[in-house]
Length: 301
Image (cartoon, rainbow, N blue to C red; front, side, top):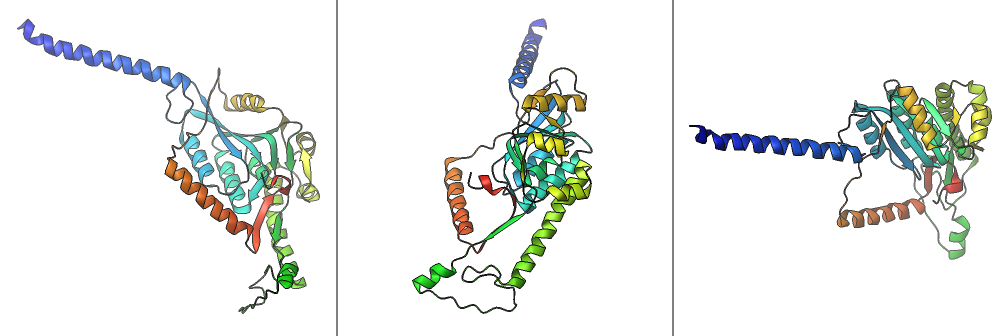
């Protein structure tokens, strides 16, 4: 009878050994991995990089949502190196950060540049940290129209327009804008600028008049921005981690995690490059490039 039980006992021992081995492997992997899905006993700080021109908010909003729902992530750092970008995308990210900053610690860490729409996004955080030489500020709006009137005239090219309203071809490249059109555009930009000013004033607890006085598109260093109350502290990325750790009440060394990189195949890369080139070509040759919270100094980078 005893010998009949040996196979069962052997199977149980093998299962136990495999389970122990898997547990050890998971523990080792969790000690070196900083990606989503890693298992760790340490509290975590999630870092979301925002680099380059802000054109779409979808990926960043998804990253924010994932880190917000992860209970092991006690704080989120938005690491910014951007001259700003599209109005809607900047506002969407700002609004989402404002929402989650009431539930979880959010710190904005500025690198080389965090201007215009990028500064707008930073205002969604509980604290803003900048380097003394960071380029920031540039609170304002910009819109550009392509003007080809003289070139078309020299080439002998004309354009016939039939429209249903006075402003339907506003910004057409074959003619100069009228005074009424200019006033309409200025009113539009003023409204968008005031949205920016209002959100900065409210999030930074600054008088509306003070923010309005510097909302003329001027750029500032991190040091100048701190003196004006636009930034909370001067420091680097490691300082931002320490501040986030303290605000979140993390004991010991936190685990720093980044969004998981999406695996992309060769075909996806080729198609993405083609689509980006098409969009860029269409945008560069369109009547109006768009309305931006953007510092154009780094526009082409």
